[in-house]
Amino acid sequence: MLIEYDGSKYKGWQKLAGEDLTIQGKLENVLSIMTDEEISVIGCGRTDAGVHALNYTANFHTNSNLSTEKMSEYLYKFLPEDIQVKSIKDCSERFHARYNALSKTYLYIINNNDKRNIFSRKYEYNITEALDISKMIEASEFLIGTHDFQSFTTLKSKKKSTVKTIYSIDITKENNIIDIQIKGNSFLWNMVRIICGTLIEVGRCNISPNDIEKILKQQKRQEAGPNAPAHALFLKEVEY
Image (tube, rainbow, N blue to C red; front, side, top):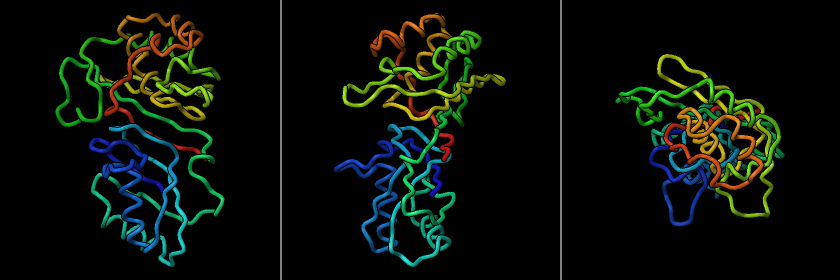
């Protein structure tokens, strides 16, 4: 399934005990009723509370004889209006939306303007002071490649590797809108938001571009910038 969703009112992708407002939970509920089976949905990753998706990939196993066309119609009718299955197709029994993913691309949107946009304010981070985009681009270059991103995650467990590969970071500005696109093999908990928050601090001249190399080496969360607000972050693409 290829899914898009507005994460504004949800507690994130992952289903939580005693919590109805998750994307995974809503999908599993509707799919289980549709197929008359207990369906478990496998997602390409976990998005935080408030984060959105433009193209989120998920899969599930079913013995249902319903066609994918009928499934699409049912899902469109019974899913909440802020969750939409864009397409659905049969796949290999061995396909796994998370483990087979080769890369993910996230998009962070900043409205760098002294006035917020009333109609898009829920999906962009309004920053009134002018950001130095050239310094942000310079800083981003230190993050590209394979590094230990311990400084850029709130993950505290030592059992999980914090080494990840960033393939590209593209920062562009058109009118007052700054887009930060980050593509990597996979991401740690809060990693994208912390990277964006750190680049914003560079743009504010609170952190030097050259400090990024030091922040990576120190492997301490407190050395990096704050978590950028979740509402301006989108999972844009997953490649297989």
